[in-house]
Amino acid sequence: MAFSQLKKQSISFSAKAFIIGFIALFISACGFHLKGQVPIPLALKNLKLNSQSEMPSFDQSLNKSLILADVSIIDEDAQVDETVLELKVLKITFTDRTLSTASNNDVTERERTLKASYFIRNNTGKSLYGPRIVTLSRTLSNQDASDDTVLAYNKEQMQDMADDLAKQLVNDLAYSPL
Image (cartoon, rainbow, N blue to C red; front, side):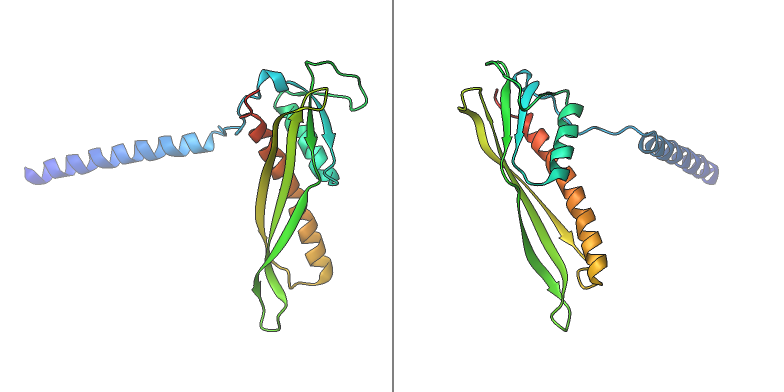
């Protein structure tokens, strides 16, 4: 008798575990993802973008990220009134730090840090928010490969970093007190 009760409890436990596992798998596989975006303040819904980043891939990613955040970008040459604010991005800087070297002193891994400074100003040039700094770091491996391989890999990583930095800047804009 005790054996049959134990068998019923184990089946019950197994069935519960299966159902919980199935639900967890279903939720993770259904394609539901958070966008990671918080709403941009109403005052920043129309922006004039003035980017001096000197990184075209960053500028493209920033434009795309702003549009995805429902921000209207006003033409750079257009005359604006007091309701349109300017997002000014300064030159993006990057620094490299050696993380590891091979026995022959060739660099095998490095950490690259991108830093973007920006601020929001009104049509008279007065800064309303900022200067703010967003920073992104990434480890670059394969630095001891052939020159062409390293160049292609680093270029691809810089593109990804520019995209991530633009998203981070837009996310930071969402917390502005404007």
